[in-house]
Image 1 (cartoon, rainbow over the protein chains, first blue to last red):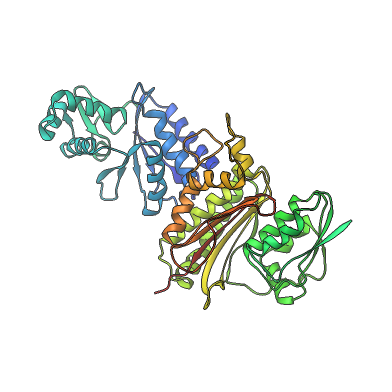
Image 2: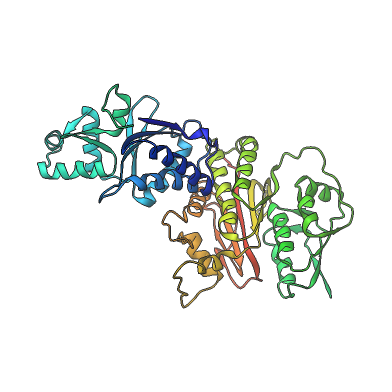
Length: 186
Length: 295
């Protein structure tokens, strides 16, 4: 697991060049570790986040690792410390790029932000509540066919909202609060 | 030949058009004297636009300073003369600034690079809370959003203008309507390439049947167009529009020969959504106005 506090670099995250610089720092950190990583992006000490910076740090960072085809690396993100004032910029850029992310609140609860379908959200929540689950669990809970549930979980994995292991899945946020969710190459 | 440009007593966004009506017909290299001797008041828009005006001239202009001591002193307090001295030959006695003027949230500040935006954001955060929440009765949530909007409009200079510009923020009483109402105003002015030329620099840009400054403003401000192909671009001004809408504010942007305005829902201001065929002035001049909350 990689933890890096964004506030070490800047206190107010404004302007596109600043956002690009922060994103490059994060990408360089990720380059130093293996092909699979779970990264916590912590905004808890960030004062202001404007739209341009959110686009660079949040949207463009996610776009590097999210793909419906073949993502080049398996990197997952959990965003912590997102305040109400950060939310406006983050939601705007997620909407613009049709992205979603996992945010973890102070009580440890995780939730999805951004653009995500109702059934996808339901499937993610089922896996999150279970801690870990398989295709059959989601198919049973949602009433979807096994094939449909499998496609949905695969989509959530490609969007890096679920971590796939062997024949099962772990919701990204829940993995970070559990003692030994799974071992990632780091 | 030297032409005297008479500055009106009250210098704000609307009356600045009188200045531009006098300047626009003149060749760029013609010497001008900007006569502010009879000025009694200037908004942040007026002060930043006067600096952009000097930047736009090929021949260094002359500035006659205001005769009224309180006006001269206030312009000093706004750091106007500090910057004007680099752009104008100043004639007349400049009064030094008096003690702290609490209506000034941000003195006239130069913006030419990303670090300047950081400095502005750091500075305004210290002052905005009191001014917005206590003096204008606005919800505490506005402080961050106000600063975000300020950041985005300043970044437009860095990203698009092609040369430096100015920003200033102040609270004052809005006198357009009877009775007045306190407002906070952000003014940003640059003499750069402007919205139309910025969009024209987009790769593969194709001119429409009707294509002018008004159309460019509509495309950018109302439809989020940008000269960059990056789909993440254009969100800043969209966010500023949402911000002014949420706080019953007003956004106006002048570029070239047109001015577009996103108008408040309330009745505190009367303006036209789009004005065209104005006197030409290069670059972009932005004004955001947020009124105090009344019960």
